[in-house]
Image 1 (cartoon, helix red, strand yellow):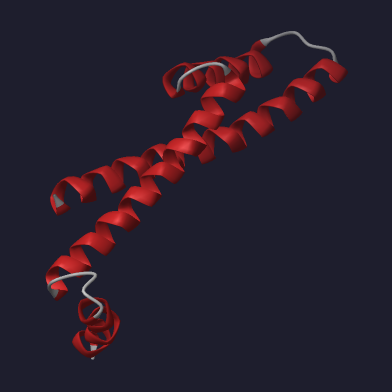
Image 2 (cartoon, rainbow, N blue to C red):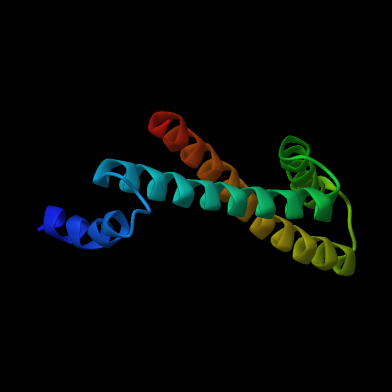
Length: 115
């Protein structure tokens, strides 16, 4: 069934002389998809780097220090609430940023295997 579905997808591309063989078609299409995913990850990572003015490693240390400050510092209730809200947003960004870094690494690994 998979082979039949694959044939249905690549045969028109071969008939139109876009690709010479099914292997070439699949290889090129997969490589294009992986490249697009890598560009998407890079775009998101760059957006975070610009937003925070630092690389991931610095941001990781920064968020850990902010959390420690929230736990240990002598803050007023208002200061604690303001810092807590800021940290919650930063932690959301931390998680998303880390996910894009992990995805980029996975796509790069797949691209290296594919090449």
